[in-house]
Image 1 (cartoon, protein in one colour):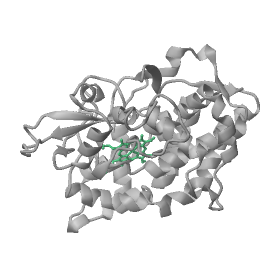
Image 2: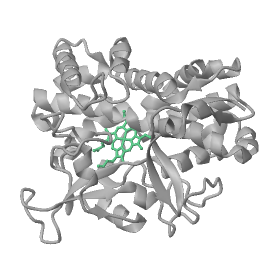
Image 3: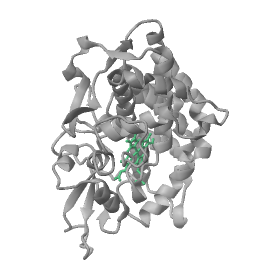
Image 4: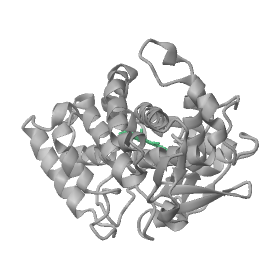
Length: 374
Ligand code: HEM
């Protein structure tokens, strides 16, 4: 997956005709036979497909099946305590009355550490953090996949020797349907797993900070819910979970490419390309009345499509929610009276893009969010 940017990469996707609105996007996302994913994106920075994102069943079913165990509740839930400790350590300066910068200083190392924990690649966390906010950027912020590709190449060699952590090592010997995975397929899977939960979760963490600063009136409900606890009381969706779902609904901004094969099932090589506009679904007033508002009492708190829908629905939704909850709990503990945005950072520095929802400007794609305790 990709971040916003150049006309050859995600800029091209953003210029495609769009499927818009909650019902239409939901139906299209479920209809993979018409809206196919079998194409390679980010052509300015890579020459392989990110898998299983950029393929269709039955190939998709086999490849996704290999990854499901690594993202199951059984595998991911035990990470909660350590992810919560990571978040608490990163926002600790707030508790001492100092400001913190949420995008690069908190969210980036936080999400890289979590991905590395899931993939059993902790020793690579420093290198993966050094890529910066996007794995596709060079040190000047231009799109460039060279350094990331070199890392993926090396990782794949290590996996051949059984030295690239549980998940990549298992892919090196996997043979779905009796066929071992090719090197390019393994690179495509590693690329997706390392990139997909990066700028997306960074946006979620920064969005949580922005929303806390914007809505101090919600603090009593958030404090009443209390932090996540391991004793099972965290099983039902509470006000903090609802807050996170609303931040996802409002600020996530992925639009994803599809090939519209139409009812006549045109060949992939000739069918037109379109984009599923997930934000338009999430801001649809028919599905979410007063869509620009963060509401903790929506009857459909998880009815948004921030994580997609259908065959390609986000495999990392559970870790993303756990990271969001850890970040929110840590921020509320360190700054119980709420957050204020540091005006010195400036509005332009804060926001990389804007959604206009119901006439209200909602930031999306945060650059630099400096906050301190209220
Ligand atoms: C707030 C955080 C996140 C958001 C908003 C998000 C959003 C999405 C969306 C919209 C899709 C569907 C793409 C499509 O239909 O073409 C998707 C797919 C995917 N996501 Fe996420 N994601 C997030 C976090 C993560 C994390 C933490 C990981 C794992 C490390 C992850 C891994 C994936 C993978 C592997 C797919 C492809 C699934 C498939 O094609 O079967 N995501 N994500």
